[in-house]
Length: 208
Image 1 (cartoon, rainbow, N blue to C red):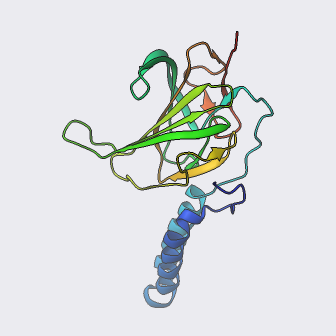
Image 2: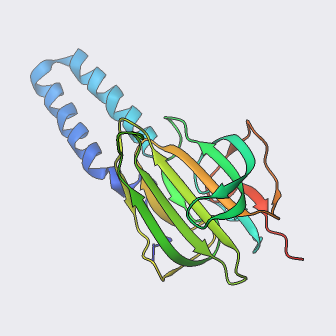
């Protein structure tokens, strides 16, 4: 199960930052002051991009929280192609400078995961996660990575349990994330709204 303990700077980026730090030191000794300032600025930008602050998870058992940081770009009723059922789709587009960690939208059991490599019709890499709550609610998180950087880390295994808002992956430089939830859910965000992973409630699942 993914750990709830993690550093402020994402460990997935430590190798990159160490390389940049080494280049900065070399620039200081070999290339002079101007090169050192430029390399220090680049290092600072990457440290900012790879930040991963702790989030406060709302105490709402039937809430669907945002799995990523970003802007809500679409809300609609759609068919979820993996489960072949009607669902509410909330699409979140991550910006280049958003935080790249991925979190679980609900508490429950990881039922299945799918990974699709790019083909001639689609240049982006897809990764879908199907989680089912103890109440039987089905939520699918569909991830499309950016065209240039398709690297990601996922710390989930089918059959294990995961908590609401728990950190479970890392998407280098972000992407587009669709959250498919029960069609009867009451959406609590709107198009154009900025959301934060693990803390912003996208919708409340309604049980009759």
